[in-house]
Length: 337
Image 1: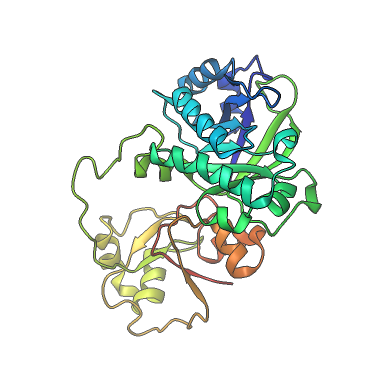
Image 2 (image 1 turned 45 degrees about the vertical axis):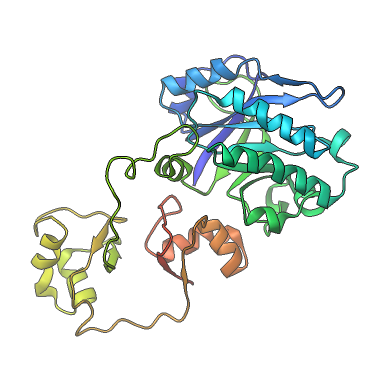
């Protein structure tokens, strides 16, 4: 899990290094907004200042735009304006469409507001951005087609009710307070839990101003299927060879197969490739339920859909010998507790 904050011009004085040193893993910056009265659009006055300050200290950043669109045409205008605000910048976190303006959106039907959101998001996606939707629980439940949007975009849920906060709505990020305290920023700060490794996903895909990392330098060739094992506390090459390969004396083979020696140190969370013949003499207990990771999945999303409660994401990760911050890939097979 990542600790992420979001700020705007209302946090004018920021010690960027102090924020990073305080354990913050990322920041979402307001890039601009639409004023609901005349629907004029404007940039956040401190976008460039905050962007440059956090980039200088190596802090991953994302962006959000506060919308007051009540028509498809207005959403199109906002999308074009946001592209100008983001031009020339790189964002390791998504670009979010902030949907909560009651004056303009409160009167709209669920179908209309969902279409407005999709119009904005599709325009940004076509321009090469990883897009998300921000809204509170009421809007996701009553004003937006949550299930439909969750299939297309990453979602950022705002719910400040603590233990009574919504547990069923899918989200990759949860804003749980607007009155948080972070060293390096005076006053209240929005604080979030993030359940997805967006920087890795976005950089690898070449979105948000980044160039595809591997595909741009060399062709990707399909890799043969390889069995792996995630190291747990107390493991050794001998123990793993005994349990996974059926013969502890194959420990040297296991080490060499992973480019190490029998004296190399392994740590919990390390992923080892298993040579052919794994489990030949010591069959492992059958796993009754498994889940194959799909594109766009996260531990939270899988826990919500398969276990009935997204907050069991840590349990799911640990059950598979990982942590909540471990990266999962399409095609990975997870055991379900």
